[in-house]
Length: 258
Image 1 (cartoon, one colour):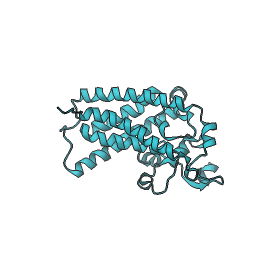
Image 2 (cartoon, helix red, strand yellow):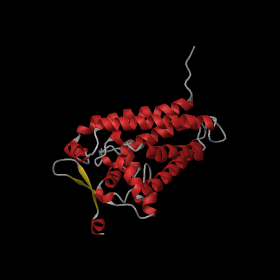
Image 3 (cartoon, helix red, strand yellow):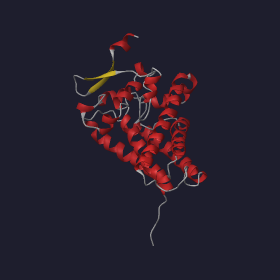
Image 4 (cartoon, one colour):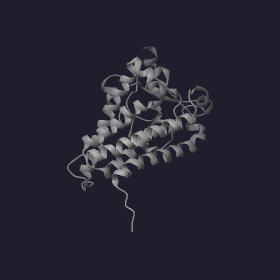
């Protein structure tokens, strides 16, 4: 007698497993000093929260996300569109992915930007994420629980519902979104990284945002940079080699003068 696992459960659990496996891989690569955006000493000295606290915070947020995901699948009856089966057409599947990516990017850009512009929300919610001045992989989802609920969980729910994807498709989409989010916070610029080839929104782009000079720029996450470009919040940067090894994302001259 076989044990069947529903797509709804997989769509909830698999992205969490992917998060820790993928971030764990990056933590193992953290000793590659020639590809780090910050030195290990900077990571230890500048960050305002311990790694143990980060792990606990991320696990708590993932627990909340799982509860909301199960509730969402229950309310929608297991599907958001016309069919609960994975589409056989690649074009339909691709359109659902792109739609979900655009919905998630739009939601996260405007809410993320508002968290910065509203002093109360920044102080009491979003500042927790920026305790990681030097981002690292498993700190990608280190947020205030309420921010995580609004920014990530609600954004994910909207992406799922408005794209019309089924639970099976959501397994792949949310796993991919998780990989992209972890990659943006990994603190490494590895040569040949396909995510850096196909997306301008990479670890260096987001690292600029985590620095003091970039707190009013580079709000886009996790996929495209379109809203930053359209609304003038994109801070261009150059990737310079540090004398002690590794890279540094430095804002361009015209932004230094503004």
